Every structure is written in structure tokens, then in C-alpha cells.
Length: 386
Ligand SMILES: NC(=O)c1ccc[n+]([C@@H]2O[C@H](COP(=O)([O-])OP(=O)(O)OC[C@H]3O[C@@H](n4cnc5c(N)ncnc54)[C@H](O)[C@@H]3O)[C@@H](O)[C@H]2O)c1
Ligand SMILES: O=P(O)(O)OC[C@@H](O)[C@@H](O)[C@H](O)[C@H](O)CO
Image 1 (cartoon, rainbow, N blue to C red):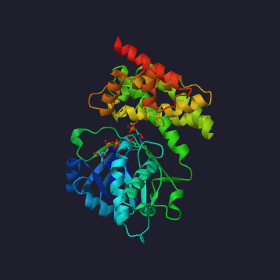
Image 2: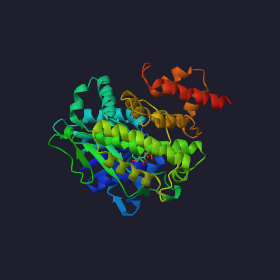
Image 3: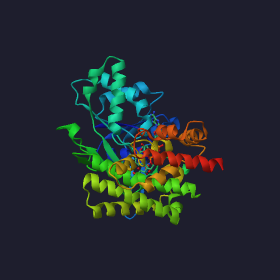
Image 4: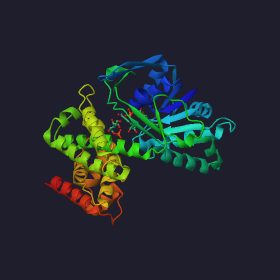
């Protein structure tokens, strides 16, 4: 059994690659980072070091590695013959890997079992997004029918994998907790045998609970922490101003998840408290820059702040802390982060507060949340203007 995995970074090596390896797949890593791919291609194994009370070390071997830029033809041939293709490249990179998967579907023997496609990104419906881009690429070649050679399942992946020590080589340090929920329906009778994944009938409660608890909480700590001068999540959480904000944000998303999915309140409370412990894990030394990375994505319409805040307001429920977290995100000014640089340029630009609020969040102009977002933009600009 072969799985081609795009993105040999933190979650690629430390989670998806490991779980597929443990399930018996030969993993073929595909990445654009030449140095990383050369190191993987030259290695026989790497180790995933868990930290935490249940920690173990796991050796991953029997993998191969291909450069998805310079060895694109080989990657296409691998996918054409593979059982599974997964990604962990970031949601905004999916359109760039889609044409390669499209070409592999065209090359695939129609008699072969369908290619099982799963995007493992922090986003709602990431595999649907990937599928749409694959369909576009197929249509451009007049090959739309080849989409039937794949099955597409959305997933929710959860494991904190921080930036790695530059001296760690290919080894990855991760928390001991993980959860990989995968939609079952698309596979029909051919559900893949991945013992450490959980196959579910309806992914929505899983992905929304994960994104709006783990990632909303995480990003709240990162942005308020950055604004307070903290460097790590642990430092940020030690600040009362930050811990109060994350508690308030998670109380709001709890109200939404309980109302929308009927989660028992005490179960959601337990879940969010477990996550507060995960965020405070000193052995991970995660940074506010990593967790806050790509702020334009994180403040967009269906993401961790505006997604739940819009739904809360539509239900007549409170979203003040989520709006404050959005406001803190506007302060994220990190020269190495292209989206942060773009965000700061937009805030410094001439676009009106209202137009910029719409541009950043994608909220319709008549949405009841919008005036509060406009206000946050206005306040941020006023502070910057001194
Ligand atoms: N790190 C975590 O804690 C964590 C947990 C759950 C989900 N995720 C999600 O996993 C995804 C990856 O995150 P990460 O932390 O591993 O990031 P990362 O930066 O460590 O890894 C991303 C990898 O993708 C590669 N890449 C970029 N463009 C590519 C392309 N066009 N083709 C092939 N490879 C390409 C990069 O070179 C890099 O090696 C994101 O969507 C993230 O939200 C991360
Ligand atoms: O990966 P991002 O940029 O969407 O979000 C940063 C972190 O919140 C995220 O990587 C978490 O560590 C992860 O989602 C935990 O499962």
C-alpha cells in the first residue's frame, strides 16, 4: 500500500506520515523544499518524539521522498498508482498541488480502485476545496470525467506540532495527544484501514469543535500574547490579560457549539479545559509567531474568529471576546510573515474602514457583525495614527 503525502513539514512528518506508516503504508513525501526532500531521500528513518504523560518515541521508516517541483513527473506517476494521497501544506497552497493530482487522475488506470484523497489542513471542507481545484484543472484539459477515479473525504487533524529545533534534523517533537477524524461516507465499502484514525458519518461537529476550540483558543492566545510582548504560548498564557481573553473566547464558542450541535455543556467544558492544558505545555515551547501565522487566513469568513462570531450574532448570542481577538489579530506585525506584512499594509492604506472590514472578513455588508468589525478596524487605525 502506498500513500503520497504533500508537505513533509511539521504535521506531515510528525502526524500524517507517522499514522500512515503505522497503518502499513509506504509513504512517499512530496515537498517543494529541496533541502528537506534531499535529507529525507538520504535517510532510512526519522524519529517522532512525543512529549507529555503518555509520551513515546516512534521510528518512521520505509518512506521515499520526491521534490514536487523538479520531480513533478515522478510525483504524478506515484499518485497515479497510489492508494491514498494526503496533504498538509496549508489551505492556501491546495490550488498549487491540485494540478499534479489532476494529472495523476488522468494517468490512472480506470480499472484501479479509486484514489483516496484527504486534505489534512486546519480548515472547514479542505478536501472539498482541493477537489474544486482538481476539477478546474481537469476541465481545462477537457478531462472532467477523470474526477471519478478519486474519492474525496474531508478530515479534521489535531496534534500540536510546534516549530522544530534547527538541530533536530528530520526528527520531530510533538505532543502525545492526537486525533484524526475522517468522513466515512465518500469511501463506500472501501474505507481505508488506518487504525489510529476515527471514521465518522458527519464531520461537521468534529471539525467545527476542533477549529473553534483548539484553533480559536490558540490564535486568541497568540494575538493577545503578541500584543502584550509575549514570545511563547506559555509566556502569553501566564499573563492574566491573555488568559482572561482566552477563557472569554472559549465560553463564546462553547455557547455556539452547544447550541448548534447539542454537545452536552459539561462535555464541551471538559474538552476546552483539556485544550487549555495542551496550550500551556511547557515542553512544546510553541511561539506566538507560529500560532498566529497567516493572519489574513485566520481572520477570514469561515475561520476561527469571524466564523463563530457571525453565527453567534445571527443567533442573538454574545461575541465580544471574539471581536476583541479579531482586533488583537490586527496588531500582529511580523516581518517574516507575508500575510502579516500584507495586513499591516492594508491597515496603513487608503481603503475605508468599512471596505477594509469587508475585504478582510468577507462578511456581507448587511451582516449584523460587520459594524463591530468596522469599529475594530477604526480603533486599530486610530492607535497606529497615534
Ligand atoms: N503544526 C501543527 O500543529 C498543525 C496541526 C494540525 C494541522 N496543521 C495544518 O497542517 C498544515 C501544515 O502545517 P505545518 O505546521 O506542518 O506547516 P509546515 O510549514 O511545517 O509544513 C508545510 C510544508 O508544506 C510544504 N509546501 C509548501 N508548498 C508546497 C507545495 N506547493 N507542494 C508541496 N509542499 C509544499 C512546505 O515546504 C513545508 O514543508 C496546515 O494546514 C496546518 O494548519 C498543523
Ligand atoms: O496551523 P494554523 O496556522 O492553522 O494554526 C496554528 C495552530 O493553531 C495549529 O497549527 C495547531 O497547533 C493545530 O491545529 C493543533 O491541532
